[in-house]
Length: 360
Image (cartoon, rainbow, N blue to C red; front, side, top):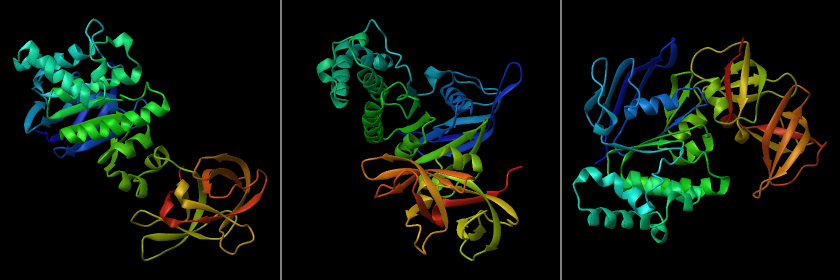
């Protein structure tokens, strides 16, 4: 049975005054896959450890499945929170086989040893490791060990699964395959899942809901689409992928939430802006989807620049472009390769251009 989670005004301060979390509030519906996204030091690991009961909270309240597990007085230990974890370093018992590592998660169910081993074998089959059930961790690859750890978390049949950057130690190809496996298996189990990562592509691919953390604060929470198309702050925009950013002057606001802006050189174009007044100098943050190559002689371009680099990406080409010596844009996609040194036109799409007040 999936558990709902409520986090209210969560704070965590370590000895010495290091404030790792500040006033974090988040509601998680049962069965939701939530990814906490942020750079090193943002507080995402501390938040996961507070949910698990490994860390005591300093302020606020956490409820899991309607039961308060942490507040100013109570602290329910990890083994009484009905949750399972998938760790970055796998955390497998080296002296136990894959089957026995998975069966270990059933130790509190008062099942016979034969029943535990039978269920563990079935779960290993589900993650594609049935043939390796009798191997020890040091006889398994990193990806195989991670699947054993996932099988152990799933077989516990808890209402909550916590994942501590479980793919960060794997190579790129294996990481992508394991991402798909984790997504499908966890959703099949219908458990509520909290997953932390610093990789925005991984977060967007996995999540039903993304929470972005900056210096201990939850600065935005929403669907991957909301985070990408409506970043709440410059930090969120930068951390979730930009081609570049450019100073502009605000000219006029349209009725559809767009604003006409004027770049230092080139033609005015539209950008998305937050509600409220925005005048004078501003900063436009440009997603890779917010800029397209055109012919420099075309009437369709807003900016022009010189190609400084180009990379083949299978589906087409990504270009790095120097815009009049003031702005560098990367990841500018085109079906056709532009030559290094070529002057090209750039057409701006307001859906991928996000306007914020100029930073001091």
